[in-house]
Image (cartoon, rainbow, N blue to C red; front, side):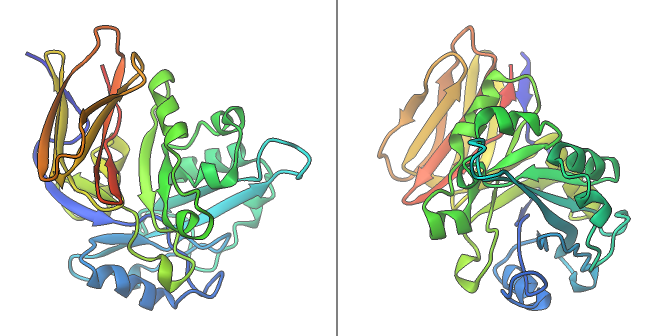
Length: 302
């Protein structure tokens, strides 16, 4: 009786944001003010990720709250290239182990000119790389696929949804069912102004609230992405996918063997769902919805 899961069996849940801008790059809020918004909202961690301006703000951490080091990298395509607008990649790291400090511009990394090379470099020096808002970037799937050093992508980006109506990137995430590479989904704020805070987050199940344990849990896929609902559990046992969440009204399952399975439809207060997997499915993930909020599990490989 084998069980497959991404969430670790024992641990605690920690809520966090992996994409945040401050006055250091675009005039949002001072780092201390931005960090305080998440701490006061009950989050357990965030990362300051300004464009080409490295942030290592560990001095802003406090009991029960971590501040990861990080930055956002970007490259653009010529407008007549028809490949999309740009590549954006967020990188985060343990502030004790990163080789960079606040204010570093990483001119040597930027000079590489190619996002694949940039991502490879940041991976080599201990960073976790996340592909940001592919729908907003209008990046062609074949161009997105070239950046294979990212651990995952933002399936939801709050500022992109608020400002441009294109914050959801389900199509890119869904393709992961047909690919061999490990692909995780994230939800983030990417806050560029006060109205962009507290919209997208990840819920991480980790053994403890330390930089190393949170990063280890993320790398293992022991987390979910959300704009509101909370996911309690998701696993596969004996050909059945089991899902548990906070009260919601809709639950869907997706595999590479079917277009989708809408198991729970318009049934407010639902907290559980079970799905019999097609015999030829090689991967599965689930989404739940409550009002305008939704949450995504990671893909379980079968």
